[in-house]
Length: 264
Length: 217
Image (cartoon, rainbow over all chains, first blue to last red; front, side, top):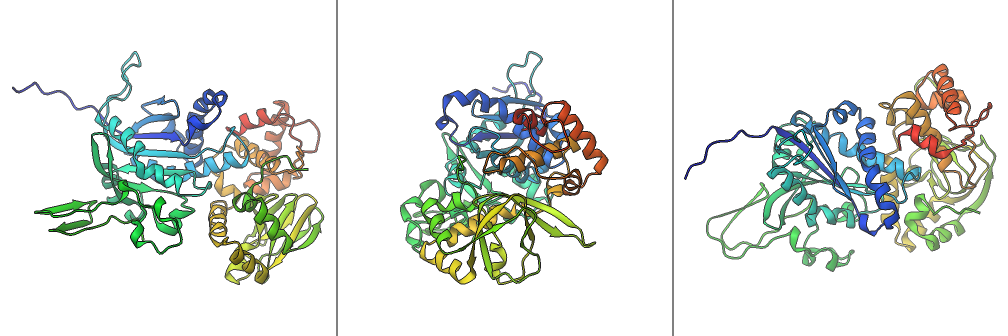
């Protein structure tokens, strides 16, 4: 049975950040850190000349160990460049001056899509499938893995939805090469999609092995293979009839085994 | 005498390897204002900074010196030129009385080989590159008061003896941040009135928390 049409909510650019190992920090610092996160984001926007963008945000709310903020979709490119780099720099500065009880590292996820703005009583802030997508992406193993496999000076690892990547990066609005982002398949609960990884300052194994580690069998032998063999970051396909599409760039027919690789 | 956790290359390397590196070097002491490295000179040694703070300066086309960053105990100095066998990319001057260990390029290479520390050095160099743009460019979008507070906070944070004195003149603060001296004088006065800095001609942090608030951290 057909239903009546309803109006599509406005398109918003959505940023969600999450502090790594938040629950591992002493409980006495939790409230202090939760309160500090909007200030850190504000500082990162200010640092890259985007203070007005921060002030014009449509909504923002704490997620406990992180923060979710909605913006006009027009500023989506800024969230990717220069904001992510600026967030890295701001966290780096704060670590240097000992601003917080611990040096903070963050995962960030950036998406774009229809999101309801908060209603007058402030309930149901920023609801919609895009909101769910942003949180699922942030939970993806691929982006968690980036912080695990990098040194302490890598303070930001980001995951970007396919739509945000296509609309802002591929189209040239961020002014960045699309090659700076690495495609990965993401599967969290019922959510399944391709997303794009971006690390403004890669260090450690990210420099040595790329953003998406190769399967153990192809390792050159310098790193322990067990740490690199993660099911969420590579796939193999047995007998396939018809096309298999994988992260935009890989299309294979028939009984081919293929791997999704990191950069280089 | 330092109660702060190790930082810089020392933190990345770990205590045992840092000590092993120091053993390969020749100890030297530097008075405040002394030149540790000069831009353009051949890079044949690397220095491990054991105590004290230094300024890293870059030459401007007009002959002036631009503050690039401030470094403290646990940092390496001159490791970029020594790796690429090229001239020094920056000038380094002592802020405090500093002690260093001077390690030759060959001894440094041998150390990296023996301790499998090439990757650690790469990580360290990469992390320092993020601060390789002049200070005033890093902070260009911040309001003047915030820029000043951020610079003072960083200099004080690097003091290994807990000193709250910022051994910079108003002129040096102004040059480091690309601000007019009168602007710096005005905001330093306000920071004194707010209780972040002690009254008087010397720059001394009185209340770090107030200074942090003005720095927006």
